[in-house]
Image (cartoon, rainbow, N blue to C red):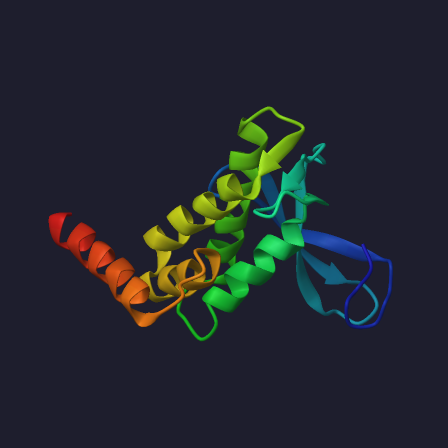
Length: 154
């Protein structure tokens, strides 16, 4: 593993742990050359499906694209990097669980929204406003009212 600081290839693993879901290994490493510590994640490489977009176009599955959307939704919000990564993994698992070679983007988007709803209300509403393409304030308010009713009933 290449050190992000000095580019050295010689490093040692200090600590290894499974993630909450048990599908990735988090490794804490230290560069032998500059002693900088960094974290890596190891997961099984899976054959990911194509994504069918809302307009019918097909696109290669991109974990990074999902992470980008989650990062934007969580900007200046309290969820940790690990929690954000878990939302992305949840979406990946939802896509793989279909067992299909092509998956509608709605499967991924709904999984992300469910994860964000459990994690942070503001991040959820930010993501939903883009994902569901709210056209005006009334749609935005309706989503907030739905969220508020759900929270009151818990």
